[in-house]
Image (cartoon, rainbow, N blue to C red; front, side, top):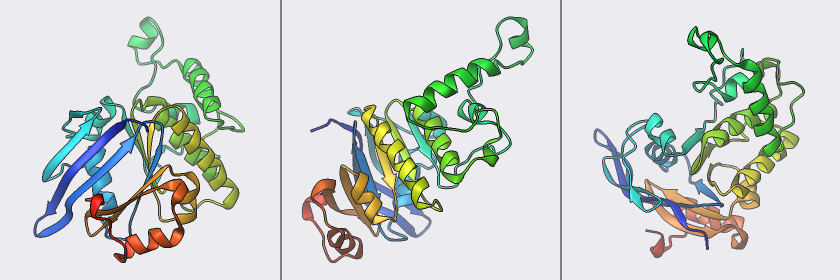
Length: 254
């Protein structure tokens, strides 16, 4: 069994009188895909925001590699090796794939030109091609704007950007939403390759067949609390639906 890399214990999150998380717990293991599922309003987005530094829990503990951490911003999370691929991609459509990969982490030219703000675009493209090849991402060109690429290619670039900088955990929020069947298959292949690098992948998805096809473990939220946990290979669709609707609750899931 893989080691627990990310461990959230009894997280709560209040927005005024609204309790979005009610003692939610969650675990992700190195080299595995853990799916986080639940119906709308179950608390998935809030939990991911707390675990990626976008928001802070009202109470509870977050441990990374067994050490308690305080993720007071996405920047703090990224420094610890935690990256997030958002549903809306968060890419710069007018920039090429390499520029998107190094967005915020640009490589300056050496010497005086670098001090004057000139970027080493050739080196960024070289490194970008290497990162894309590691994940099996094939692009028609690395010099065209990302806005001209297909949805699947744009999503693959967004995933590659996170994986290039993540050393611990990658959250993927509905990574195949609005993609065609063929494009979804490519993104799922990339997810498996990320897992095989030893990174903990957290998949947030409403697509249950995809969840079952790619996940090593599945955790279910209902009304802001974990109510069930499954091993991906041994789970049936009806089990997931039952847990999401409250018909099945595992006591040990708390």
